[in-house]
Length: 128
Image (cartoon, rainbow, N blue to C red):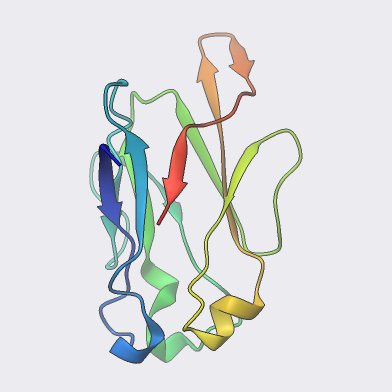
């Protein structure tokens, strides 16, 4: 797949949970969404969405993970730890080797907004 990807991980997780090989990708050839990942809090000068799972132990540090886009991006994201959100394009985020995440139903949901209008369309991103 020819894609632009950002790795989704929590460095304080053990290797056995599988969080070293997970990516959110966008097909190349389209205008870049400009995704950036931070496992240490929101990034300066970016619009960030907290990615967490309340049932995950705080010690494993999923309470400070963010997926960010530039402020000017028309890509608007919302995180739902309990399933897809209505009227949005949603992507399930999971890791089969992580017992807590594999039992949950977390989704990254998004829509494309333009000045004065909101477009609900399929967001062309993938989770690998």
